[in-house]
Length: 296
Length: 344
Image 1 (tube, rainbow over the protein chains, first blue to last red):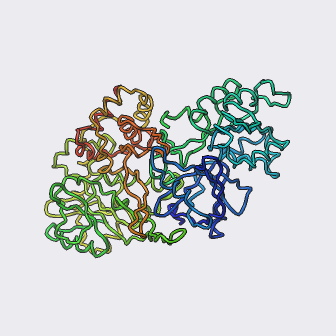
Image 2: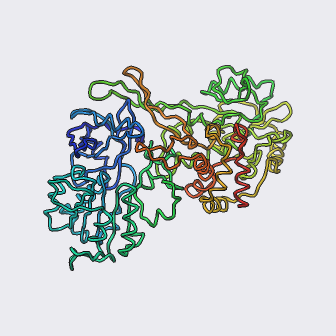
Image 3: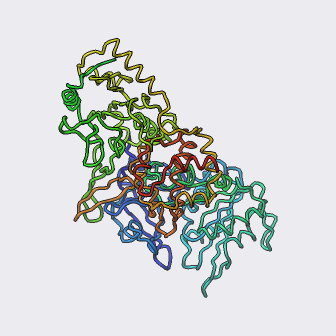
């Protein structure tokens, strides 16, 4: 029997500093043992426990897509404004070549089968864009693109320097098979793009919207699903927009965060009502969240 | 299989059990009785009501070594600590505690993920249950009857041991139990002993502890309806100081922490009992805490046992052993909380 508490060894093969503030980095990890790589079969939306012996473990969403092979990627913010983020701080101090551990994949995935045949609007804010990036990569892959309808991506950050995956955003903006809307709360002199909060942009361009830039190519809300991940304040103001646009609660999907230790539904700390976010989640529809206690 | 040992020979009996492997049994401590790993057979006592800590630690120790490591440049050399338990025995488990093992099985062996540490110890351990004596008054804090557990229930035990006059009568209930009794080469009990044994089981069916009609689905539904009743929960938890003792003595509390302990360059990743009553239990690195207030944490504890566990695993995760009530420094009594909740 595989012991679910023992991490698999991985090597850090690439580190990218994503933002101007330098506190968000993407770590590319390669499995030391081939059989571990084969065992680590994941889908967009899942997470893993990153393990640094001597410091501990922390749960991080998988930013790479299963369509990218040979490695897995995690985008990690160094935590510790109020509480010391021991593991994330240690991660940020790593160099290429360091060996750490990974346990996973853990949790459920974005509901890919449910999204099939539907128009998908991906809404992300700040660095909570990580598992959405995985989803976008997955859906855009040549083997998968035809399974999904119209794909729109609405991604915002406070400033241009805080946008993650900048090269990919540029590449996606050039594609014809998705509608890409990148926005910042406040631009700078070099910023030529959109300015505005994510909920406002959603109201203008999401499926079902009739903003000035919408056209006959803007899909209706009828067959559309919104996949939303971002800071609580963004989610709070974005949800009413989608209700107004006509999205049902079943068709608005988000991902929860809670403090976790085991990641496999045993240690008892990440429950919301009778659901363990690590195992029954982290992904829930708003309809599912409505059935739970508001304790997250 | 039905066997008998005279009380005079109980030390020989305990010694014989110790030869089979590690033995855990009740011992009189300075203040209370506790289950302990036995090294001297003469310290084992069967004259106890119940222990202050539950015997869950036999399967789920307060601290468990997971990974041994040595920090080196760019990483660590590490090896999992082998999960390897010799066949063990717990002697003298009260029916409410024996039942708790089955409730914990649903969690540690269920929901699609098996906890290898719990499984190994459960598989290798034989439980000798020990009904409450019908001639002894139950402790006023106990309410196991309200959870459908009777003083002489067999659930969770491999062997049931009953004291009758000058004898210990032992009946096997499972294959593991018969295996142990066969190995011990004890003398057979007579037909008369067996009749007396059955009579004591029957007497155990009488209601004895505090009682309240509790239906699993009814209390679960009720608690979810009053979840937002802040007045009720604030009042209930008013005296609570969040010390967590209720969870530590509890036979069905299973929350744990995983943490690394390093001294110089060597260390151990361990898991430890943790408690939902502590502030930092749910405190996130961002500073956000979904349960910052004591009433929220107390509500979590009660709802976990009487509502969430019912929804997830189909049973209440409380056995009415009364330990939390006896241990609470501010006299919070979960039985009264449930009683009040039902009337709400």
